[in-house]
Length: 236
Image 1: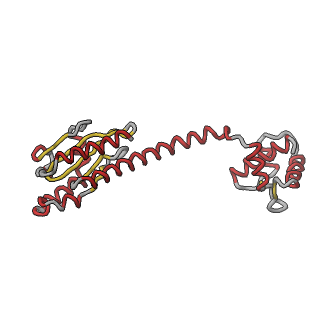
Image 2: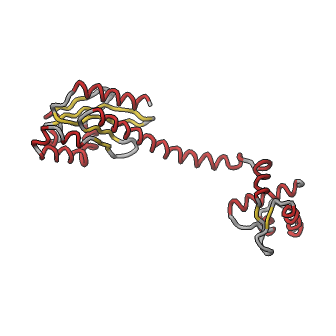
Image 3: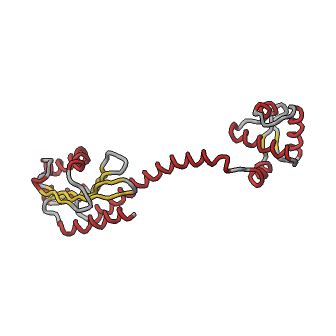
């Protein structure tokens, strides 16, 4: 295969990859990459076909690469650098989506861990979203306070579903564990409950993670549990 045939094979493969259509001499000449006649190109294409690098679906069609043509292209002529800018731009866009998804997964898994460790509701504000993950509502409903007063249980459910994100935006949240007990709460639905909350950071995103339960909760145990889980998020 001489230099012109090599150039021709690369041009045909590049065009076929882009269009999935058989490539003819007219299209190759229109690209401006070849300074020769259409007859010369057809002759060279026929030579490449004879050597097994190209095929022709039918007599009036252009040529398409064969497996041998692709193998030769990959081994000898492919230039990844020509696509590098496009690939890098696409990668950066998809990487950010991927990392955001992983951030959210990590926070959800931390909430699940905390909910398994305590008999209360575990929650966290989700990075990149105006949303709060919470798990363990069934834990709370098993507590005597909530079984005796269904209105308290429904109030907690209402706060989790509708108000918790807004509440976390109004209270102090930092790297210390903060305790909001009983009537310190702004929301009347959970005045007989306690809230423990601290912050976490995932990459450049800051959020809040905490525990909600009856005022009778085991503060010492929950403090250690919340500290361990929030530290896990900060260190990952």
